Amino acid sequence: MIGEKDNNGYFGSFFKAVRSLCVGLKTTMREFFTKKITEQYPENRRELKMFDRFRGTLVMPHNENNEHRCVACGLCQMACPNDTIRVTSETITTEDGKKKKVLAKYEYNLGSCMFCQLCVNACPHGAITFDQNFEHAVFDRSKLILTLNHPGSRVETK
Image (cartoon, rainbow, N blue to C red; front, side, top):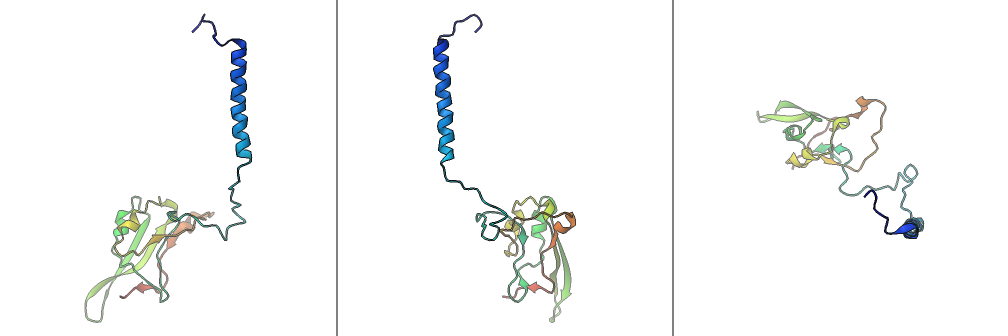
């Protein structure tokens, strides 16, 4: 308080300041000799691996026969909180006369995705998943709208 005498005095304050300086120097020297873990990003792009739970880009895996698991149910589209996914389906008639809904186009807007994984959790067939890709820089936002189903792909038969 104002008017109270400092109990430490001049030398007490001096030794307190020297002790504080030594603690700071000790921390600095410890970090100076610690092994560095800096990633040289542009140069090590080939061998860089993200951790397993990383959510990069939404993908629809296709097998070697250009088949996917999406049945165009639209549950992923309904689960998405900000309308990042747009599933377009067509109704076709099979050989035995039944009507069947098939996937025509699966659009994914990477620019508005929150990477919340609600779409992946909502999919009952495991048709979509996140991959490890993290390089998304583009100059035009229209390049962030991706079509996940390949041209000519169809639903996987079991």
